[in-house]
Amino acid sequence: MDILMGLLTLLSLGGIAVGLMMCVFQQLRGRGKQIAFYGVVGFVFVFSFMMFQGPKNRSQALANPPSAQAVASETPSLPAPPSYKQVLSNLRVDSLTWEKRAFGAVMRASFVVRNLSPVDVKDIVVTCKHSTNSGTYIDSNTRTVYEKVPRNSYQAVIDFDMGFINTNVSRSTCVVDAYSPA
Image 1 (cartoon, helix red, strand yellow):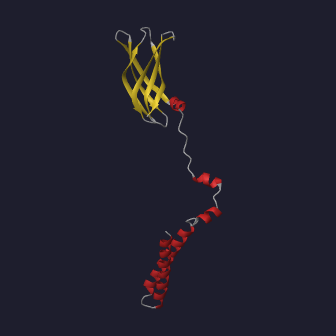
Image 2 (image 1 turned 90 degrees about the vertical axis):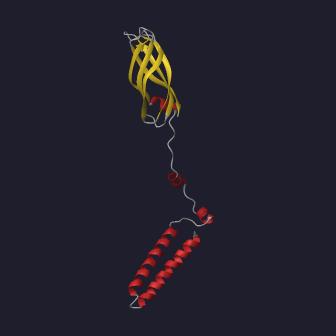
Image 3 (image 1 turned 30 degrees about the vertical axis):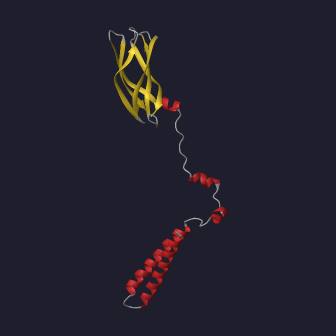
């Protein structure tokens, strides 16, 4: 790199000298001005590049070490990945509709799993708690939805078999209990 900078410096200085020499002659003055101008531009470019390049060798770098605060500000800090509980708190079951089938003994549910977290998840464990008209919880079912839900997205689950339920169930609420990282 130093050799290249040296050659560019010599070339630009040579261009300045040739351009100025050409300016002496009336016929070559216009072209000489151009060559001298481009020589000056090249020299300024090379000089500024060399000035902002930093220390050339190890002894110069050790003589002027950067402060700890400067180093900390230069290194980008990555945000910590969210914890399991944080991701779980951002998983929701929305738009739940369900019905009893097989003589009122089996629950078939359709719902949307929303992933509002910054990570992809899969194999979502959904628990549905069932209650009667009076609000008494009498039953619950837990099933795993083997689907991948991308971050900040959703996955529709249609006509999902939640298993056997008590025939007295009239209401049901579902939540996400667990997941696996995708």
